Image (tube, rainbow, N blue to C red):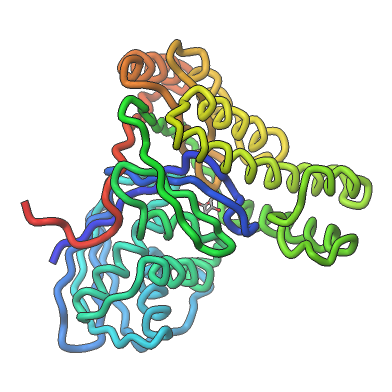
Amino acid sequence: MHYRAPGRVNIIGEHTDYNDGFVLPTTTSAYTNVTAERRDDRQVRLRSRNLNDAKSFSLDDVATSDSPTWADYARGVAVEIEAHGIALCGADITIDGNIPIGGGLSSSASFEVGIAVALLDIAGATLPDKRIAQLCQLAEIHFAGVNCGIMDQMAIAGCERGKAMLIDCRTLHTQHADIPDHARLLVVDSGVRHLLPESDYNERATECADAVSILSRNDAGVKALRDVSVEMLESSRDELGELLFRRARHIVTENQRVLDAFDALQSADLQSLGQLVSQSHASLRDDFQISCGPVDQLVEIADTCSGTLGSRQIGGGFGGCVLCLTTDEYLDAVREQIAVEYGRISGQTPWVHVVEPSDPAGPVPKE
Ligand code: GLA
């Protein structure tokens, strides 16, 4: 059987998910493709066409590893599903895909969710999208050591074709909005890959938690940065210190931008959406500090193109892709100008992808 899981493109709401906040992702037609055949034992044999590598594991091997490999993401998914009470069966699995690894389109969550839907299906089991997302998130936390939020797995498991999905990451309540027909989302890879992205990611998560423990001394109702207003932050600025104040200010203001962006999308107001996207980048660059020089240059290039409504770093940060919001009419010119100008300063033609919000992860429909 063939399955596929899309990539995730986050329109707005960066690093808010693990702060119980709001996010507004969509999916795109860059995929992890999974072919799975059932086996009669408890061995899972994996072959990655992209990595030209093969690995195998037993479903009974439930120990986490100190130095995880790509196969541990799959093993983690299997272990979490079985821990949830579903008996899986062994499988021969082949994987390939065209989502840039480490590029901010969540190749890892796409891999996890693709493996989950395949393993469940060949075992004759089903689970709701949200449960699949939660189990894949646990796999990433326990088996890959990244204290990630739930946005990527939720979007890949459940975002509807042609739509963006507002997720309340505290309640997991979701609402969908159409992406207007004339809107175009362009993703451009800066080509920059940070050496230890997970350690910086975990550091930001720790800083947010530190801010919460200080803020909750003044207000016991503060359980997460979701519960904090800009006024509360201002009044605790000295106690927080400048670094934690800025980290928290990004999260607090970003949550509001996500809600405003959802309203803008619902009323097809692309100008306002673009402004929010650009404000998000400034906040990620200056307050949360997860951007980097080449990404800022790419955003500046995108912003100077006539027809760009807004652009920003997407994903975990420290490199990877930039999202640029434009319209049908300007798409070709913007794409061309960005490729040429960024190509000139980086010395390479960047990977440029026009987002096609696609179906969530599942079996590949028969032609
Ligand atoms: C990564 C994580 C997500 C989210 C983003 C940043 O993609 O997996 O949970 O935190 O970074 O918004």
